[in-house]
Image (cartoon, rainbow, N blue to C red; front, side, top):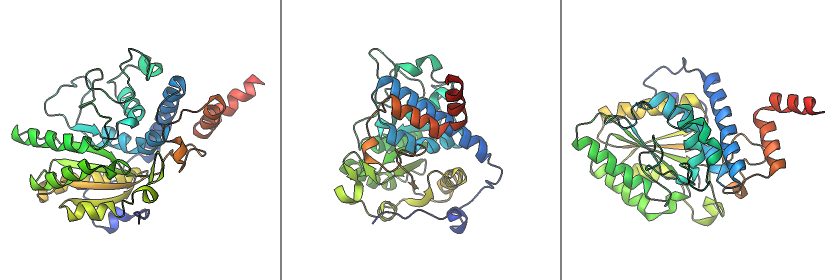
Length: 307
């Protein structure tokens, strides 16, 4: 069975809220996510290639990580004590590029170049070409292992930096994920927080119909991780869970897994919960319909002016 969607006050009920998130500007975060969803669709539509479903699914998580939880500085992309981020499900690159553009790692002039020949914005993130990308990813299942290695190296260097790794649920059918899941507690990597985008869909359909994952949180807990379950589109829950993970890094000897209940294609009505939008670019009509979902005021004003 899959994890059921958590209640809105799950974090509070779990007594896992170490910081007051009532001051979080949810409206501002929601507006940023909306704009970045448009950027994601712009990139994929222009390229006529890419993965909208997974990018739209995880952008709320990236907004909170890069804007509220991680220590980083676009002016110092090689800062030794910066927090690291690993996008293990590398096909979600448009979401990562969108948040990196917002924070100044990538110039906006590069936005139309996704997946173009000689572009820095390849179909999967490449650390050689893009500041803010700490490791190239794309071969599913490998990102969590890389994150384990990063966390080990940072600890050996006595660095205060924290490593965040976003994995997919379909990706979690890979055996290497579970080798890494065993290794992290064995090395007591308290400086590692993983997040699972639990949208229950992969390229061929529902994850539970293809290779059932069951209760991912329970599995990681059995492997020795601290585990939280949250709504992956609730900004207060995401931020609270991030704070809880950092607090646990001081209070326990375990890494933390945050299972994030998400919606594939979030924000675009006809893409939501549709496996067919895993790796398909919208045509012109679909692109316009998506913009109507994401910015209806602008869209309908443009139609009015055109007519």
